[in-house]
Image 1: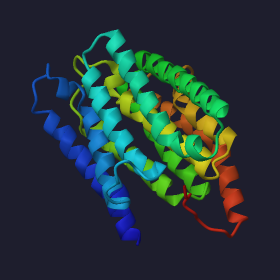
Image 2: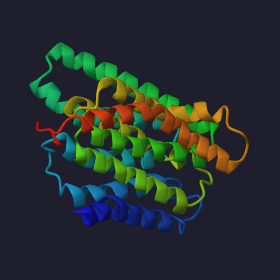
Image 3: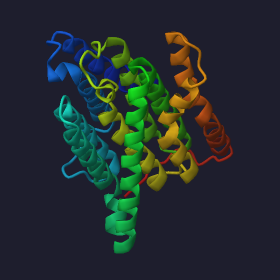
Image 4: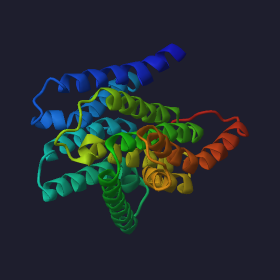
Length: 288
């Protein structure tokens, strides 16, 4: 059981992401695929891990866990398509990714639980929030190095996996951890971000919608809690706050970006751990 978990959550996504990122080094520096290599590598790593952990999804997906597979494919494709494009093309790709994320994540609520007015309000509010956060992530990407940004996002997804585990959804926790592993491998193997936009180099078009989808799944279909969900969505910005007080030096700044995220989320992880240990229900996977 433990060996299979390590193979699916660590070895497989790391291997696939690493192979794709390494192969991108063979492409010309002006190649769109080379500049979008982090997006392709992360998407491929997640898809491989998802297939191994969950199996091939049906079409259309029958639940929001299967929908994560399609979101990973769509987000990666939209991100690569917008690499080197105009500002409006990039904005359009971001809006399309947010719309896909909301549609794939909220469809059980819209169909079975929410009223028409509640559906409109929920979709608009969450959509605006996701777009604003994406914009804020992009501002952060333009102000820090790609290495610092990647370190913060690795900490975000590792923490997301931990909080989802305490929210009693082991499968979502496992899927979040595969993104953290793939991100680490991409940070080590991907070609230098020559000519690439900072957000593309850090794979924000993939990371942002996947983070929001995992958080909304945990909020609506597990036991994540509203406060933890909000802080998780804001967590990537904690790296910027930590870097404002960090001394110069690449290693110190990478550590500061990571610690900024960890310190922000540590109280929620501690509270989740206490609640989990005090309850003997074990894990459950939501059923739609």
